[in-house]
Image (cartoon, rainbow, N blue to C red; front, side):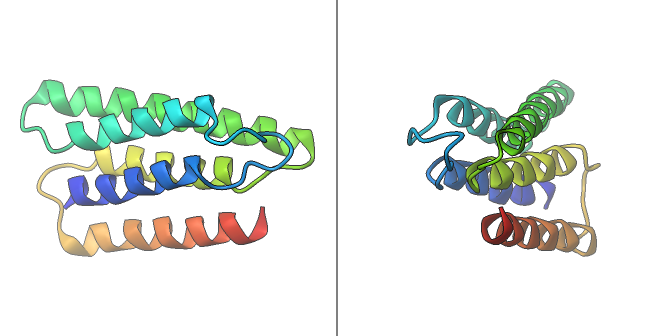
Length: 129
C-alpha cells in the first residue's frame, strides 16, 4: 500500500512540472523541477522492490527529491511571485518520502491519511500559492 501512495505522489510530482511557475519559473517545463519529479518517480518505482537495497535507494532518492523541492519552493517564495508548481512538487516529494519510509506491509488505515494529505496539500498549494 505504501508503494501505491508513493506512485500517486510521484504522479502529482510529474503534474507539478506542467503547472504554472509564476514569474520565478516562466519556462515550461522547468528543468530543475523536472529533475526533482524524476527523482520522485524513481523513488516511487523503487518502493515496489522487495530487497533492502531497493528500500534504501528509494529513501535516498525520496529524501533528495524532498530536500530539493523544498529548496525550490523557498527560492520561489523568496522571489515574491511564486507559481503553484514548486508548492505542488514539494508536497508530492514529502509524501513520497513518507511513503517510501513506511514499513512493509502497510495497512490501509495508515495509507489513507497519506493520500488525504497529498490531495489536500496539492489542492491547497494550487489555490493559495
